[in-house]
Image (cartoon, rainbow, N blue to C red; front, side, top):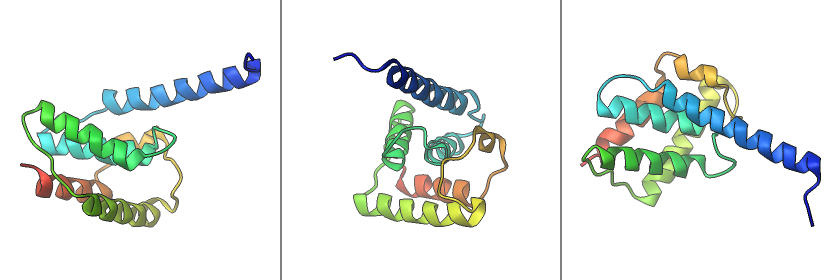
Length: 127
């Protein structure tokens, strides 16, 4: 059975929308040290909710790959990643007043407590 044209076009527009967010994250990555760049990726993949599900896990995995590519090991436990997720949720609501996906305009905002939390998490778990 072929999909309804509306469903197909809707699916394509979602893919394009997600692609645009990923591209914006990459295109706006800051210059700086490894931890600053890794924290930027961690924070923004989570806040932009680039993927339909598992954004925290995806962000951690992306940062792990980024750090590995740059000669470092990033080691954390499942419990630590769950604590990070809870802390980010709490700060997200405190700073933005919502848990919903954010607009790409956050890519150019000044560093905030979420960014600081991401940096600290990376610093602690970087080997």
